[in-house]
Length: 196
Length: 196
DNA sequence: CCCATAACTTGCGTGTCACGCATATAGTGC
DNA sequence: GCACTATATGCGTGACACGCAAGTTATGGG
Image 1 (cartoon, helix red, strand yellow):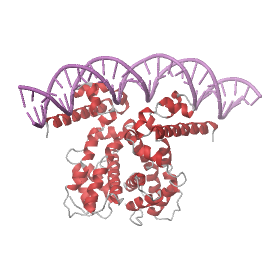
Image 2 (cartoon, helix red, strand yellow; image 1 turned 180 degrees about the vertical axis):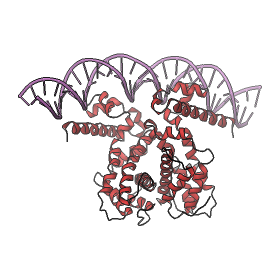
Image 3 (cartoon, chains in turn brown, yellow, orange, blue; image 1 turned 60 degrees about the vertical axis):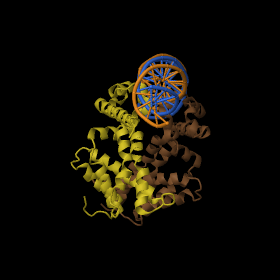
Image 4 (cartoon, chains in turn green, blue, cyan, red; image 1 turned 90 degrees about the horizontal axis):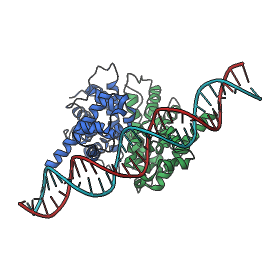
């Protein structure tokens, strides 16, 4: 990969990480106190450069979740071809959210701060496109004619989101993987393979 | 109801309507040209009052869809108690989106303008809470323990959103109700029997 | 190895926006 | 009718997103 591309990705992650870290520090109520300058300074770039990468604080804070969601399609495609759809999706999502185990503070910040709600939804929804394509490829349906892939992808993304919310509730002892499996089981009651 | 409450609701709708109308007029590409002053003036209030009702242009433009989503729970609750969940949900959503038939221009504006994406998702997602409660009440499950109501509500809201996107695609001759039924049938495969 | 070019960073200036505060007005309940 | 509360409006302010132009750093062909 280019040096340029790698640098670009690095600064993007640096800014995103700095934004989320500062947001967590100031707490959900002091979000307005997280100035653009603070983020840029913490990431070691000028505030103008920050705006070259993100067009709002919310976008920067939720960047990590957005990147994560973008990997959902690839995760599903990497499952064995013979596996039934439901099992494949569940395994793929658990795998996706296993390596960087979700950070309670970070997830709580982006999921339960009103000002970030829109951007957080955008971030989770970014999984739908790639997921729908992967589902269509796996079930042999045509996403341009059939609604099944898109609707299922939306249901899966929604289940992930609901699982996150539930996992954040106080008094939840289960691992995120366990909650995720339970949530996705509601979408795939057992082995619902592809159909119209 | 109070005179106050009615006035409040009226100005809220006036502002929202004006915002959406102006956005449609200027087109998706000239959204930045829709100034807050224009919206306020078109609604017959001061720009300061506009900000008492909405805290961003996007919120004002998507207000109608948000209000619509808030009615989803009530729509489901008004279905006969004996009806199977899938049929009840499908009938409720078709009914909800039947009276004020979706406006192609308006829906297209809020669903396919990048700057509005986050707020549009927020608007559609507003249906989930009430829907989950109604589903829990209908299925006798406890939403505090069971994930089924919340996950199903998210799936339904997602299906509605996907149906809207599909319905907006050029060359779609079907009525919105037809697309909606097909989309929701993916969430409730068992309820395919013809009805209402 | 070097240079022309493209990509990226940065500082500055600008128009807009969201909101706090103070004041005037209109609706409500006793 | 009167005190009280909710709402509307004007003004002022701090922050923000972005266009523009200059300086700096990679890239690829000769």
